[in-house]
Image (cartoon, rainbow, N blue to C red; front, side):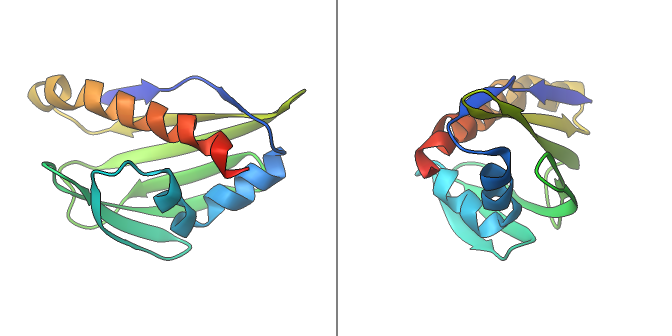
Length: 131
């Protein structure tokens, strides 16, 4: 099992605004790096490929108004995973965190832990620019 917790990132927008933006997976494309190809999405699911890696698919499993999104892997993925996006109010707007839990063997963990950690942190770094 591989767990990645990005820690919280400040966003100068309300928790409701951030939740609404992230609740529509079409918007996730705006946070993706240039290396992403073959993006396909609707409000509840998306698939994409990061150059040099496998295709990744995920879907929203649960929405808890203004504070939590729970996503899971979907389709042909290299390993199954769960992705929780946590949002909490703060004085400056809100704070957002991504927690990833993947069914990854030890060999795969050594290969993917750093790139995935960097990927999730980059998504959070880009999030404030959407507001």
